[in-house]
Amino acid sequence: MLLVLKCAGSAIRIFVEVSYGLLALAALFYIYILTFPFLIFRKLVTRIVQVYNKDVVQVVRDLSALFHRDFDSLEVKPLSSIVACLRMKGHSLSVTQFQEVFHERVILKKEKETNSSLAYPELQQYFTRFFGYSFLKWDRNFDIKNHVNVYTSGDRDQLIITHEELIKIWEDLMIKPFRKDRSPWEIVIVDNYVNGGNNDQLSADWIFFLRIHHGLADGFSFQKIICSFLDTTDYEPNFPARRATKLQTLLMGLKCLIMGPYEFLNKSVRYAEPYHSLHYPFQDLSNEYFVVESDLFPVNAVKQIRSHFKVAFTTVLATMICGGLRKFLLKNSKPFPEAFTISIPFATPERSQNLGNEFYLAPVNVPLHLPKRKERLQDIQLQLKNISQSTFTIMFNRIIGRLGMFPSKVFREITRKCIFSTSYSTIPGPEKILKLKGFPGCEMIEANFAHGMASDSLGLGFSTITFNGNMRMTIFVEKNLVESREFAQQIIECIMDEYLEMRQQSASSHDM
Image (cartoon, rainbow, N blue to C red; front, side, top):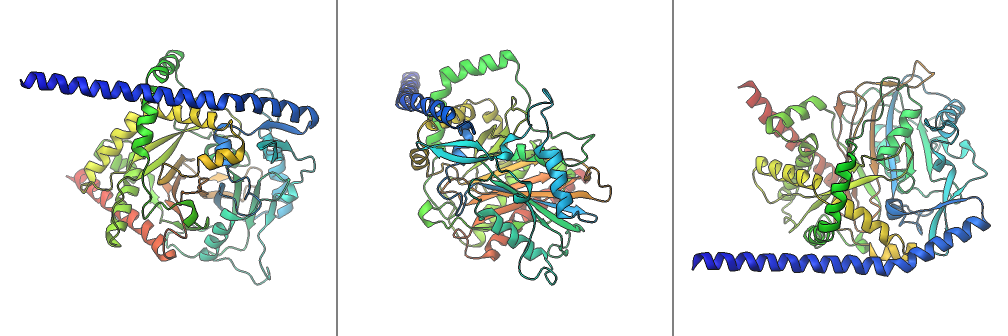
């Protein structure tokens, strides 16, 4: 009798999974059929536009289209700005010198393969729209002076920028409007900075912010721009991805064909979550942020924790966020969300040397409900391992590519709610201080970044860059998600408390 019940249960489970798979395949087929006419229409529009306007380069597509959903607020309050804060040591250059250096080494940089085409042509292109679609168009009046300037506010002779004021500049740049008919990027030099704030603040003499719209470049491309005007003779941007062999690519393609629709629908349903205290609907968000930095902590300490628990480097950092948010919710008597998903981008193995958005999103269900740290580590580690073998990330990019066939307004409306609660971007940086090429007295001693959420309903993000053996957790949180800057500061303090406890636990075990 027991055997019969087990067989019946297995048969029911197989029937449900097969039915679910067929439903997923039908849904995917429906999406492809629905978007096919728009694919033809977009190609027709692109051909017509490029014939009548030679300055139009290409249509904005795939992930770049996803990040350009703020097309109607780009010149008012953009949602998708990436802003890097680069701390420099030594005498600052004059703005004229900096403009010349950046123009020569970045704007005019040639591709390695051909040495004829520009490496980063997007920096001389801007977004425009025709027939409802977004395109990149050459700025024939490009002038480096419109993009590289010194920060000014009030009487510059009396103005001294403290750490607190620097953070405020950072926050303002996150939502600063981009200029119409100009490539959406800029450099803002802060040459009258005085150290303050965190006790571990590195002794920077001047700062410059590099801001770019996410539709032009992702964080991995961002690193290429930075390295282009630094002395990187013995350093190349190192992205956490390896190229797949032809056999692996073929096998993954077959797996996507067979299992892709089922896995995508199954995990999308599982990752989708109701709104909660850390994830508001877009109507309740202001699209303005608090930016808060943690104290510096050594990369080797994270590696020690990684070795102690036998997990990946990213797992340790994601668990710090998980444990820190758990502490924050408990401290403020807030209920745990039923589901809390964090998206972690990884560079694609086949990414090009140019700018653009070429990455996979790894969604992780953050186990806030698990009381034991080791359980949280193991849970996140297992999810990241499974994601690397899953078709979800590939299918996600393909589905976004298909939805991008719709005109921009339609695309934005059907993607207003993000299935994730937060994002975490981590980039491996150089292991030593980098000099500004051609200027021996200038060197970059630290780099951090923050980025807009791109989605209308996403209001919490985290980022880290390893640099010169250290790193710093940066959070950017929507002002309507927290009551004040003090609450945003409390989140980062809770994360660092979790880090210190993990470090103490691994150190005590190591001493034994």
